[in-house]
Image (cartoon, rainbow, N blue to C red):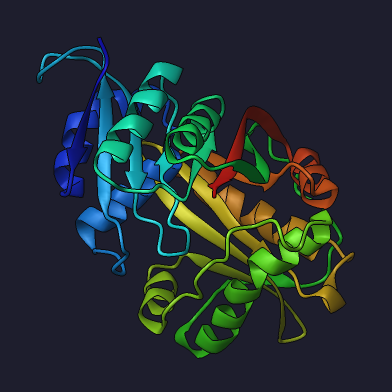
Amino acid sequence: MLTVEFFDDPATFLSVAHDYLASDPVMVNVVSVYADRDATAGVAPAPYHWYAVVRDGTGDGGRVVGAAMRTAPFAPYPPYLAPMPVEGAVLLARLLHERGEHPGGGNGPLPASRAFAEESARLWGGTVEVAMEQRMWELGTLRAPVGVAGAPRVATRDDERLCTEWYTDFPHAARAQAGNASGAHEMRPPTREEMLARIDGGRILLWEVDGTPVNLTGLAFPVLGVGRIAPVYTPVEHRGHGYASSCVAEASRRLRRLGRVCLATDVDNPVSNGVYAALGYVAVAEMANHTVR
């Protein structure tokens, strides 16, 4: 029998879920990184804030076979599901319905996220829309481009305004490049405090040509041995010169020194998928963002 246990405290969640998270650290990286930051530095307030584990039995003796969180700071505040049995995703949807908590959507690896969204829509009398199909990639043998103008540097506080502008434009630009500018969840722009935390933590790499930044690549440093690249943004006027490939390659090289490296792409974006495959990333799983209306 599957059961679900909710947590308000990310540190407790990480302790309880540790063995499960460590068993497949690439596919749970989004949950692991967010919970780790939440536990150590805190996060911006959101309307919902919980973590959960799915167990294959009752009580503390039940083995953890899945995890989820609802911490998104952007509407409709969709839960994120890490891999879990479909039955666990359905059970989670039913428990949220019992709590009177409309999920708004459901993101994460398939098939769990889709099963959760479909059961939520059935319970609430709504419909499911696929906001974005995604793909998880892991770095294999890095193949960095050569002969690209410019060089990388870590962003500083002097770059705060530029970084905020590019982070804010990233989801719109990415979906426009994929041919679906209206399909993504509406992301909340980062606050000044959030951006400065990224900069002070060395988590933003800029590619610069003749003193002008032409690409931004974000890094999530390893949790459970896995780091992640996100986001990757190049202004329209600087695209097509290899800047994104070069900056991602450098960010990947830096993270590879610390462990494994992963990233996620929009399946509909042939540019980004082609770039990462050329750099040596290998597709490992399909994911999706769903909206429940």
